[in-house]
Image (cartoon, rainbow, N blue to C red; front, side, top):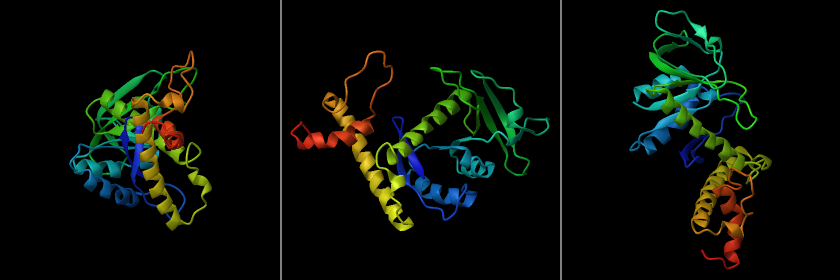
Length: 243
């Protein structure tokens, strides 16, 4: 699935089903990206991918099209700095709170893919939670801060899948056939977008207090997202609240 990130949220715009288990390959990833790249060709794009999209082949393909990317790498991926031997990413000494940026490094021991940059970051402990692993980010962006800021926006994708599943539409309980599942995802994409826009409008009009609890003391994060407010606020409109 390919999504567009907007205000920390992901909107699904293209997807395809694979008739197999396991990760997708380069051909399948190109298949799902090509229509989106054509659709958004007037915009400056940065392609973000998790560890399933870690291949240097995909990075090379995007780079040849003058597209920027940030792909999280598996820590057993090998890389090499200039005049150095290949080593795995796990060999880099990294601790929580530390960040490093390597320029013009070779990834994998295959030939013909050129050099890219590597951003390494391990988020420090925050609110009693510690990230289990460091981030190893393959990118053609020019500096660490840009790469990290853009990759972090990708967590809106996790929120999107939560909305599709237990947080909203319970897609995993549909047990639909592949053909019906594609249509169901399409309907969910439309409904999700509509709910988020309605939630945003509700908050702009300061009507969210009719739908969800007021802010709680000592709570630093907002209680409900625009999606939640829009999803559960729709019945309120039928009871006479202002549109």
